[in-house]
Image: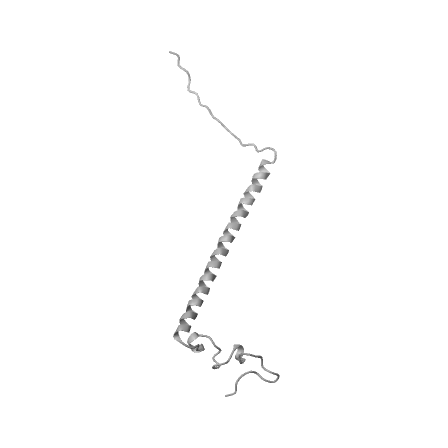
Length: 108
């Protein structure tokens, strides 16, 4: 029987990128990052769109309920300017602009 001394084997490896492979790898990584950013933006816009659509549906349902309850009353609807019936935005009567020298405010 022959005794041999113990052996140890060490293996080293180094990836050597040739012919522009490193530059292409950097470009691919940048494109992957851009694609992820666009995916994120697409999902963000999708969520925004769904929320806006849901909001419009809620407004539509609220309007249906208000119409089912009876005639329009700006005090009940939370709208209006507080200037009384027939007053529009900024105190102007609905249906027209004030004439020269007319503020549009009613004098009661």
